[in-house]
Length: 347
Image 1 (tube, rainbow, N blue to C red):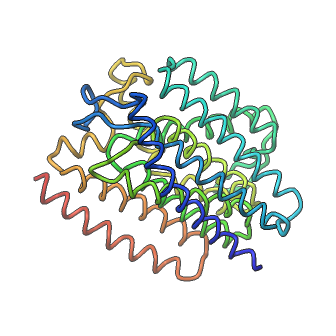
Image 2 (cartoon, rainbow, N blue to C red):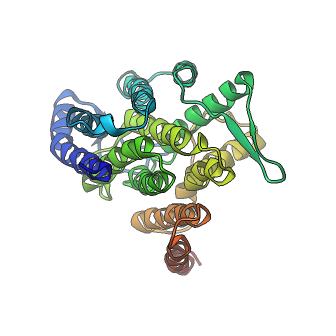
């Protein structure tokens, strides 16, 4: 069986498992009273189950297990199977941290300490940022004492960045699904089939979840789903692109995930500028500002989707992929149209 077919299998299995499991998770959560109540900085108007991350996690892991059971890992390059499970097990740990927060409301300090520990173990297992790029001199290798903190900041930061944009129905799932598809295409182009396999499963899980999470949402992914998705996207970027010894490849994950990265960075700087703790939730995120400007829930989400697709298309273009420039032009046209709709609504 050609290996690209295993990517398709991973995507489809993940979608089907999410389709099947999400109503079941919702039913169990409603019976046990595990719902997210409206109020405060939250924009939903009715109690909603927030354990949908369980379905996304089950979809991704089931897809990888099916591929492994059917022999898909057997055609991976030597050592790559270990990297797949390294990212998956790290994602499991981040999922459990988020699930514990969903169920027991952990403190920000406790969550951060646990995340740093897990990210450090993932670094030890080989999920490592080994190079940085300099526009003048190209790539330069990192010593372990530099690689460790940079990798931990990347893994923990992306997990929290996805969690922070999970403020509107379908926003985090759609943004993550778009990023995962771009990661899948880019990793395949860069001859990184193992990372592409995880990206395919994650794309299926997140986009399948949109069936129940798009406005008006029937269920939320919760911290468990957001942490799992964020860590997995960051891990795929490391093992699939950052480990590639080319200047362009090292930069691609940061371009693909620019929307949640910039949103989180801007919010942290704004909170610090106003003398606030960077860990205290507020309404400074891009989606909150769009709603405040008068945009509808769906238009705000679609605009951020178009931003994500645009930066993803830029990554495809700079990677040297055939037709990458055409994708970027098409995405620019879409972003221009949605920006015009935003301008009309907000003026």
